[in-house]
Length: 322
Image (cartoon, rainbow, N blue to C red; front, side, top):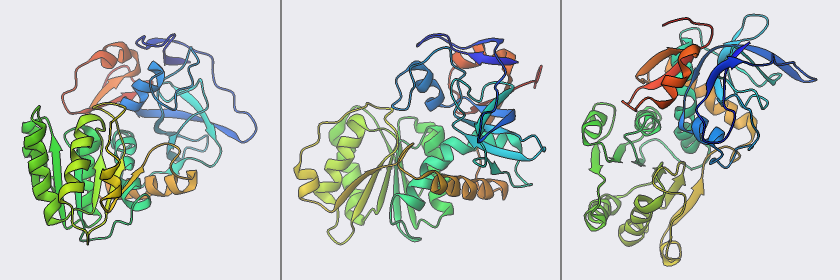
């Protein structure tokens, strides 16, 4: 079969022939119809993600949409290595696929699954979020962050605050559900002042896609200005701005901040599947949106190195063109 194959860490995938997957006990073969190129897909095959196997050659891709042998459309994730989702076929554990709603197309499902579940699972499973609460999305101008703003509003947030470096995208977020936007820049003092003003009003949940310096500033601002009657759940989801922070212990000792993480391994598989199913149902009902760009599997090399214009790249295995 044809597949996108990475032969060594740091290399771009090549469109080549690869051995057909063979299902073992408790496994099934899926014919892939759509799969997105996500940041976690890139970092896993580069060897920089905490879930990387470090084994090559490997087919990239952690999730996608496909057909079971009986033709049922499913969203699936975490195929058995070295098989990923950027291939004509892959292999998954039997029963782990999630049936797609009839009103949700393959491309939208593939594009929205991975970035959307990051905030859906964080709000539904990793915090005590309740309708009417205030959510701050730190790093909201990326794909996951833009969906997080929409999802927070869809799940009933009374107020949504968005931060990000892309000022044009920040303004677009007002139309997607953000009540307030805060630009990120190089002036940490100005950022802290803006965040303190929001925390003083009351913030219940922070969905953090950045970590690094922006997360540290946000945590310090929350500790200094947060309300004692409003416990804050700060959820670490991504680390775009850096993998580590130097955080004064007083930030946690002298505040009502609860620091948790949300990602692969933070939820039992059945609860993660539940979050994905709920997300896909909302997407099928037209309540969530995301720009997409379609490419054939044969064009994987160019798609892998293309710049980010805000659209999620979705690969269509078996398609000569789209």
